[in-house]
Image 1 (cartoon, rainbow, N blue to C red):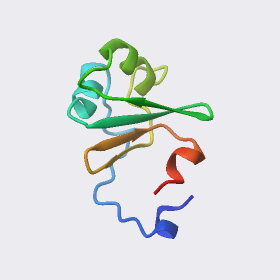
Image 2 (image 1 turned 135 degrees about the vertical axis):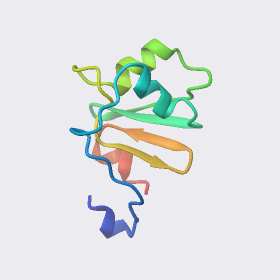
Image 3 (image 1 turned 120 degrees about the vertical axis):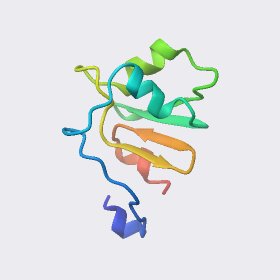
Length: 91
């Protein structure tokens, strides 16, 4: 899926290789979100940062290196982390 096909505008793009968010920095990025959706294989996991177990959520939103997984998209007050096609089809 290409975002231009859905007529979505990207306001800010961050190069994940140059700007790294790991551990507590990754948590700070998503902690204020209303919801966080995480691609996990072909499934999509849903978290509410206000009530979710922080350590469990960090395991899902970070990769093997401990960095925030890419892509990480913020749409309003909701984050989408990782990629699977079905997670983005609702846009």
